[in-house]
Length: 78
Image (cartoon, rainbow, N blue to C red; front, side, top):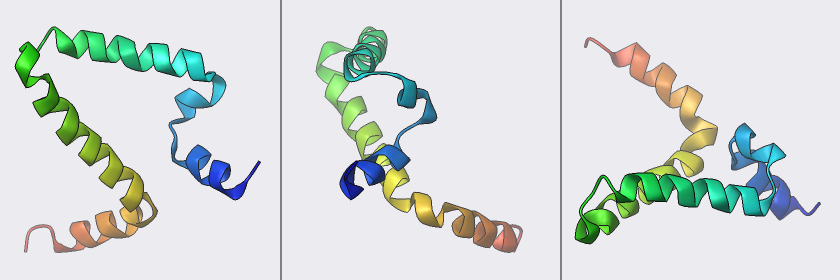
């Protein structure tokens, strides 16, 4: 396993560790099909892009999450 694979693996949900690529793709397309019916056809991209950006931020900021939450708790109510 290369170091790059190890980084990608550490950022994935534990749910995906036992699934192969095809199963993950099927799972994701199933979710896409569920929300596609919820939104108007022309507005679908207005939902997907923000969620993609939020997920990316979540992955990038994961190493500092605990410290950020501790800091937020310290300043809550001030």
